[in-house]
Image (cartoon, rainbow, N blue to C red):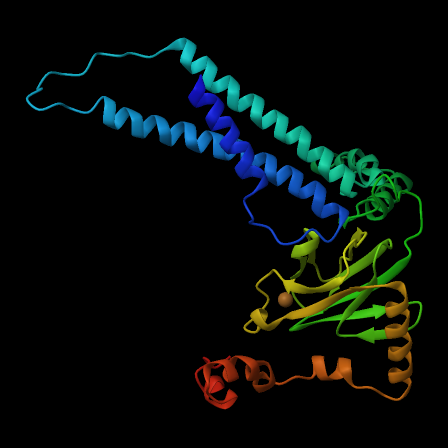
Length: 319
Ligand SMILES: [Cu+2]
């Protein structure tokens, strides 16, 4: 009884104090971490219970000196089996309901997409059975499929039906992220957004699969050629954050990073204005990102290793 209480307290404490995750820079980060911490509490409890039982059994029931007898013939225990099946079933059901709720709160479920799903199944079933389909019906189904199935994290219940404060187009390419602000026509290699605003990113890929990952925001979305995806979120903490490509996309995948700046509305407006001016004067920021040579990409790594970029390039297998 006492051991059970101690085990529960230790698990709950560790679930809140593991220090494994970076800062929470968005509302989504808070709800995701709630789920992660809950799973860690459950996992820690099971780990301590199982490992503790093994260690106690190994010491308490070890073979004593001179004991050559057989162990007791134990043949199953129905009660035990029911209990250790029922408990995991309960845990898994609880976690699945909890995680669906988190996903819904983040805006992971597009109500239109759910509505559209049965139609997709109907269309697929029809194709399977090779039944002739009336032209009008077929085109309607194809259209609704195309229209409803959205990828990524969209509006959450609090932003449903509202226009975002700021929309930015994100393009992934080998090996850079390019950000375009459609309203002002600004294109940049950095993503700047104002704090406490409702942001919508439209994520695309130009060449191969990439993945747009914001660790501090607990958001990650594949960038898929020909299939735009969406990430909608509210940044809550000003600061400078890494943007990481989380999909192996080629030899310089590791160098494919960018910076996300969450700043005050005033600082953001100022930055955007300076970009508008720079772009008019023919700034080459984006061209310098897309036109980089292999030696350019290797330069930071080469500097770290204390060799020249050319030396490092000569070690690369020929493409
Ligand atoms: Cu990439």
